[in-house]
Image (cartoon, rainbow, N blue to C red; front, top):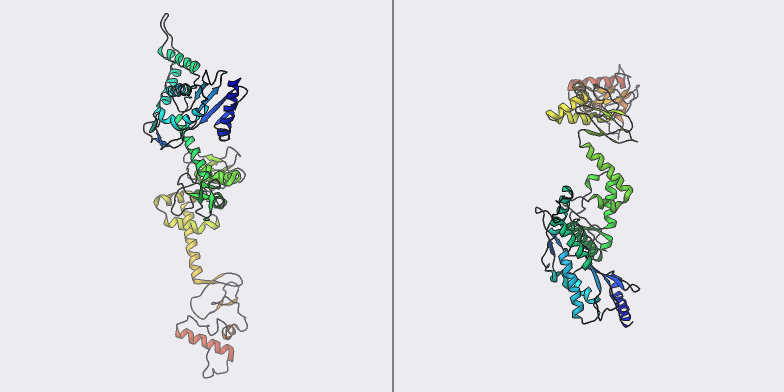
Length: 486
């Protein structure tokens, strides 16, 4: 009874010291529990990679070493705890050494309780005890996995009658004996290197959440739990600023430009970081636009032009015919319109100027692609029409009534439309009264005042127009008075 009371008291003390950190759990009815402690490293530990061509992994935190214990009735005076050592990154030999040392700790304690000593040993002394101060070699697990894979591929052996079991079977039996005798749990043959790498990232994330950082956008100092450190460049921003920044870019369709906001930093955010920041709905838009952009760079894959479909369509080599397997729509893969056979693609009115510009600056290969798509004759006609429209825009004015282009060759600025006969001003495009069109140029203060002959340099033409003006205003039988000026 005295031993049981001492055991309950020890479990209660251990739970009060380590229970809140999850390092110790116990069951006082069964007099059992678990100690789970991560060794503290004085310096980063190098882990050899499973492949020789990869860089070693540097870790500053290790997964815990666990001791499952049961306290017998004779503990602590006459018997040690019954222990089971488990660890994902230690070899069976290393765990066996720890198990034996736990027994030694009880023997050195001369019948005292030892659970606290177990915890301190795992935390402070286990790395030095195993000689792992500088490097951790996990090649055992890689070799073990390869051996198991090779044995599975070869199949079970077929020994001759009377022969002894193969050495591999003897080794397997010895391992099972170790399990039963020392209650050891051997690590699985999964990638221990990957396990250590994942634990290192989790430890760094926990440490990041406990610190405070100044946001590089808003300048406020925030707790690490409210910040994001971009994986590819390591720059830190508050979650609110980075979320707002990426939200605007995605809504504007700039999915190829989700880079770090730091000036001169070319690194892009990872898809996981984007999803965590903007949520599932906006990430779906980001993913859709990114997929569409990627497909557009593939010459043999296009997107179905129907708005309700938008599924990828694989083209046959050298063929512009697209058949959507999802909605059965048949279309031209070049212009995205209904399939038109061998006829050239139609040119939309809003694309004429840009198409002519591309055709003029294109090299031989690009020009051949454009001619294959739109036809050489159609492109040449477009060039002529664009040139003609540009010349007319620079050298003509449109009639204010019927919008017919009117070219001025010579004469004054009073114009007459050749189509509808409307009189108008060449300078301001205003319509002029037919009974006396020249009064428009005699209104003081208007921008066309005294501008009837603006731009006219030929003296003979000027005299002719002056004579016509005098005849219209003074009559046929009156003389032009001296000093008449327009």
